[in-house]
Length: 128
Image (cartoon, rainbow, N blue to C red; front, side, top):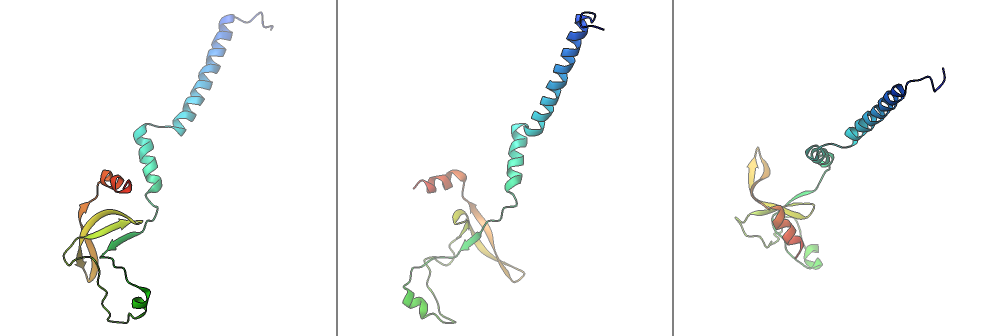
């Protein structure tokens, strides 16, 4: 059978079928690698949920000379700039995220968060 014997409609149907199959395969690939914005955001968040960070609760700070540090012994008292009853700072990787008060649960210390720093406040502090 020669090319001239085939019906032009058969060629058109075959070309359409091939184009449809190629488009279907392309759509499947695109669906695999892209998704709706909310799903992308969820996937992006899930990628970072298991990353460990350093959480620090800061009672206070002070600046003292090295000679005074060398004189410290068991029972020494170091004065801090924080006042009794003041909220403590909660930092993640050195960045203030909240403030809270000390609690004791089953003979272990913890912190009850009383004030969460908003993202806009954190950005404002970074720009200072």
